[in-house]
Length: 381
Image (cartoon, rainbow, N blue to C red):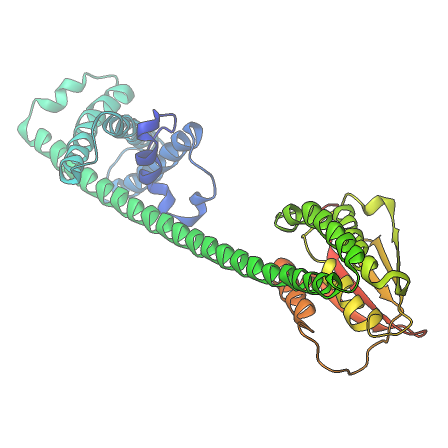
């Protein structure tokens, strides 16, 4: 029996207390509000009025049923709304720091509301003075006993409702903490996997520069300059949480430009990008491992070299990215440093990011070479 609009310092207590009707699951579907709580008070009081009407008829009250029901509903609702207001005043002006004092105040307030509500309600129905109820000690004792019984029942119901709400809030907090911990673990694993992918290219490039310093210093200098340009463009993007298809294509182009300095005519590449997909979002550092894998296992071991074609298109709700090479194809070969790390990490990143919604397919081309196909669920309609 609460009214929702309260000062900020009372909001937590308001949410904690709720309404006795919320003990019934059906009445938990609607969030607390002024109108809802007043309506719930009317429903709650009317339910009690119906019960009291039945009890009075069972004990032989001779009034016609409709008149008895009307009188009982008036008295019950009057008491209900008086309790509603009394509890609201307690929430506003009395702290819950000492719950024994607060519960005692609730008992007194509900008892007094009942003691006053019965005479006033009967006076409204019968048109008589409410003071007549206080002329006899037996009537006063009855009012006090009824009011105290009502107060004990209401306080027990309020306490039960508050315990339920505290348990629900604690369960929600625990679920939120578990979900937050899961997100942190997943993010940490993604960062670790991504950190393994980046040094792979870094070490290979620096090793190539070192090998060219003595024999071909001009070529080593040009390769190092291109590599610096690539790092300047890619390091910030590789650590971002979000990227676009167009941005990933640009990074792949910069990566191939670095390798093109070393491989010269043995490496050719081109991009076939649907203009409509350039701005679509995707996770960063998903395309580079595919290009690197095509170079390492397809083009570089082939004496004549080959060509890499990168395609990106949209197929309904799926983003399709393909890296096709004309290299040696899917064939067993001698293990190479770092071999398999890129694709295995990529598969794990896909699992962490998209679950079962993403796929990585390796398809052998009929004319030679391999197509690495990445299928990602679109993040936008």
